[in-house]
Amino acid sequence: MVNKIAFIGAGSMAEAIITGILNKGVIKPHQVYITNKDNQERLDRLNIIYHVPCMNDKKEVMKEADIVILSVKPKDAQEALHSIRPFVKKEQLIVSVLAGISTEFIEEQLGVEVPVIRAMPNTSAAIGHSATAVAKGKHARKEHLENAISLFQTIGTTTVVEEEDLHAVTGLSGSGPAYIYYLVEAMEDAAQQAGLQKEISKELIVQTLVGAAEMLKTTQETPSALRKKITSPGGTTQAGIETLEKYKYQEALIECIKNAKARSVELGKLFEQTNP
Image 1 (cartoon, rainbow, N blue to C red):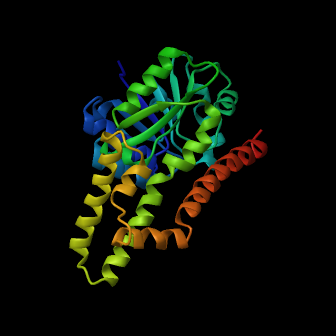
Image 2 (image 1 turned 90 degrees about the vertical axis):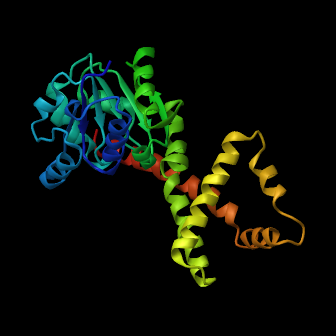
Image 3 (image 1 turned 45 degrees about the vertical axis):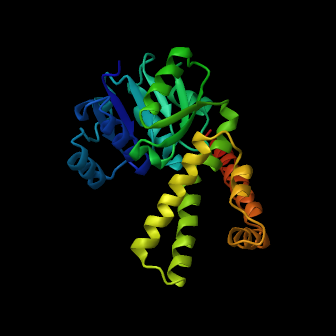
């Protein structure tokens, strides 16, 4: 049973997770403590919206916390870790959602053999539909992994991976919602150029995405098979697919995910080289 969760960092990912776990009712607002580097306005806003304790006192935030979630910007990771280092207890579970930052680096910076779980959720956590991958560090045991899984399952699905695979996860599902939103932006522009009203096109686009996702989730058919089922020779769908092929749509998306993964690797190496 979790009695207290401490968030170190108050950005969009922290807010998405907080929104998700509070909406699920698995923990009460007074059990969620939040701190950040120096943005008091941000803390005040979160306190007003979610009625959670928000403060700059790291000792008070860390006190008796069962789970500590690191959700700062990667560039601020070392400073944040040093700020909580005096207050970390071995029995606390450290959960990091920092892209590219290894569990080994976190363990070294905290200077104590504390269990660390690294996670990569996405911002769909706010509505309980995150796709989260988790990996355990050297000192984390089975029960720590299970606790992290239980936490993230309240805001979506959870998959256990090896830590080295989290770079690929970052490029795929961590950044994935942005790729979908980018697609929708283009579909909305196309609908407008075709003369459809914005309200009508939005409803059609959103339901199309939801329906396609449900088909992928509930049927046993592959994406390729589902696509071919609605692509009649010489029909409208074929004309659209041929245009996507002409502009190398799939190749562009593959390179997009590859480059996002490569950037995650690069950022991790760069950060740890400059913050030994």
